[in-house]
Length: 339
Image (cartoon, rainbow, N blue to C red):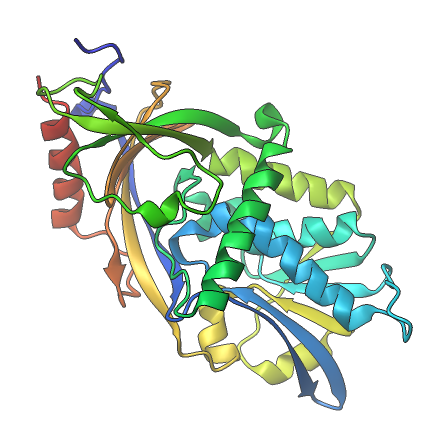
């Protein structure tokens, strides 16, 4: 027997179609310090990008490690922190904002330089399930260990947030038995493994499946809360576009944190970066209280929309959502919940 409310997936409930470009990186996250000569100045650049399709999931953990790298670049000769050092953040998506907040909490002066900010960035488009999908874990044991450390840090940091203020909600995630399952998502000590179900408690034909619980992050609220917290802590936002590395010499800050993601491909010659288009269908908001996850087809009940996804079009930079992909997303979910 179905126990959960079914979604309204009618044409009348359709609000909009959106598309975004995930900033993916072959080889996994880049999180390291680099000394650069920019113009006549020597600056430390902390790279923090390449989170791919799970930037929100990894954001708070990566922010901690990026701030530790800043500490290494700004300590006095005896190794003591110099927390008042001014820091420039390049970018203003979720990775940049969480890094700015972490540095401000440690006493640094922080300015974010970007073309778009917070809710105008790609980070705002989707609902975000806390799950490490769409990113490479690493190709060596040390890289995998660091990735697991980031996951544990991030999961713990999300657990310390005020859920209402930050738009974080613990929800069950239902997957059909035939959907891809990866043990590595659950073997790092953050999420309990899924429980097997003889029948999914959702509308549609009877089918076996599984359920696990995780955080769902309502991205518009989360990003707005980040921006407000940064401002309250004295952080600044300046609109600036950088098309050449030499332009960074104009910044007065001695330490730059690069969170430009795909922009790093040209600005910092990192051709490991590649785009992956994602397409989402937004239906009218529906407080269903659960998530359905079937590989790259999923349903997230965001506060302002019921989000249907998706796709992973690797090496596609055109954000225009193809009509056939939109139709495939709608048809998939309508079949899934068909009575």
